[in-house]
Length: 162
Image 1 (cartoon, one colour):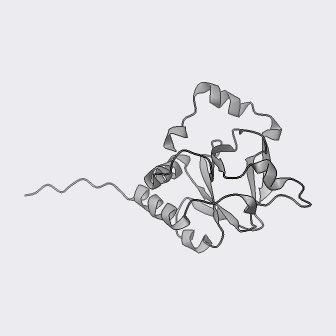
Image 2 (cartoon, rainbow, N blue to C red):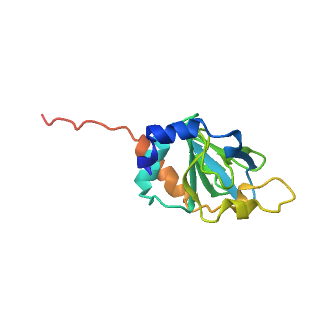
């Protein structure tokens, strides 16, 4: 997924000029949380360490304007991230800016891996605001934390033998 970090000039121009309707606020909850990792480069390196394929179904997107990676995961893992710098978890009663149904992206919300189900079908005919809960959550939070720890591990030079 790291290959998606630096968009080409045409993609970047498209993202920056996307219409205001290219994004939509969605309430977290419904069985899903959002793990927000900053900076974006660090989050993408963790996904690369997990060796996730670049395909849809993982519910992963980037916010290039804030340099953040957002991964939708099953709820209940907030405690896992409590002491991890540069990571916050958005749970029930938090709101998240997502690419709008039928839209590709904007500079504030750009899919790297779309949910397994089509987003418009997730939110169609709902009486209330849409919840994150209808999205697939295929990234294991424990594996993501381990990958992030690997990325964050300082590189030390080998000690010269005397």
